Each structure stands twice: as C-alpha cells, then as structure tokens.
Length: 326
Image (cartoon, rainbow, N blue to C red; front, side, top):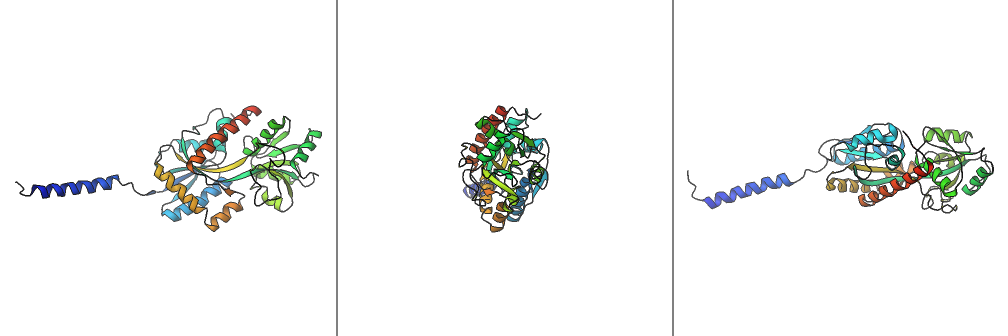
C-alpha cells in the first residue's frame, strides 16, 4: 500500500518519537520506592535519634517510607561498609557520627574510603566536646583543673566515652599540645562515663555535650570549657577552649548524611534542600537542639572539605597518641 500524504505521516512519526524520547529522558522524581537509612550504631543513641527524626519527616514529605536500619559493630564500620557496597541509586543513605572521620586513622583496615566511597550531603548538626569537673573539686576553669592534675598526676584522670571517640581524642589532642601526661579512663559509651563522673568515681571528664548537659544545668557537674568556636547558646557562661588559653582544640561530634558515590547529583541536591527546610520546622528544631546539638547544614561541597580536614586532624592525633584498634 502506498500513502499519498507521506509528509503528514512522517510528521506524525516524528512527533511520536520525540514524545517517547522525552518520557525516557525524564527522570522519575526521587524517591519512588522506600529508602533505607543506615545507622551504623545501636538504637537509642544520638545518631539513631537524629536519623529517625529525619526519616519520619522525609516519609511525611515524600509519601515514601524512609526506614532506619541499625547495624552496630566495629565502631560503625560494619554498617558503613554495607552502605559503601550498595547501589548508587539514592535508595541507601548513611547517617553517621564522627566515627566516619575517626575510624580511617583508628583501625588498620576500614571497609570504605572516606573520600571516594560516599558523597557527603551535609553535617546536619554538631555538638562540641565538654570538659567538666565534679562539683566536689574546687576548680572553675579548665586551666585550674589541669594545674590540679599536674600537681598530683597519680590522683586525677579524665573519664571519656571510649577509645577513639571524639571526646577521648579531644583529651589526647590537649595532652599533645601541652606536652603533659593526663590519665584517661575510657568507658563503654557516654552514659556509663557520665554516670561514673556524677558518682565522683572520676572527678574530671570529657564528653559530647548532649549527655552531661542536663547535669550541668542542674548543678551536679561543672562545665569547665567547651571545644567550640563560640560559646554555646545554652551555656553562655562556659568558656571556649581558646578563651581558656588553648588554641586549635576544636572537637565536635558531627551527625553527617552521606549517599553512595555515584548517586545522581540531583538527588543529593534535592535531599540537601529538604534537610535545610526541615531545620526550620519548630518541632524538629526543638528536638534537635534539645539533644544538645546545633544545626550546621553546610553544603555538600563544604561538608566534603570538612570531612577531609577532620580525617586528617584525627588521624594525626591518633598517630601522635599511638592509638589503634584492631
């Protein structure tokens, strides 16, 4: 059969092809299926709480389930390694603490490359390390505490949440800067560390702010110095490390979000924008700041740079202190 109006037919075919190609080229809006939110620590910890706050809001916002998956073990390496091997399609998200930037220097082998395995999305919120004393000790500042510990070196130590935690490394960083030997008593987590501190079993401590903060407010513990750039708005009377005479002693516990390397940049950007909007919601702002954290929400580019700087800093501290976990 021959068609008399070949031009009309050809035009129709072209229109159909262009329409089909436009549908094929258009990426479906993310997400179109459930998203796994990996937390490489057990339930109930700060990172888990932050992850669940975000997951709940993202579920409400997108209509797709954001499911928190807790995979504790090896200081966060097990869960992080699982995500490193996941497909880069935007459906596996990692939420991790400062363990992400500490572990490459702390362990002989880690199942991820901190610079190549992931795309950093943002440091959602951070909390500084707090140096504190038991109220039975007659000191009000960190220099006074250091002087007391130096005068009787066998009598005083610092309680920390465990080997390789940022508070422990904050103590090691201070020891290295001052060229002094201070005792460190590592506990299995911030809870046991602060409990022993409250009981007076260890008169000095360094912890991420969330755990000791209610006890400082109640006057059960005394805040000596905050390892932050500026004074914390919730504790304006506690001096920073630099105000106390110790420079280059910043120590934050971060709460970072990461996608697998190769994830489409459009997904990374959209999720980052959702997190920024989320931080403006009063109920979420109240919950996060109530945990002792402050929003950071730096851009993916800024967070990538921060990640590089943090890995380098903590690796240097770990090597100088000769710390290693098998």
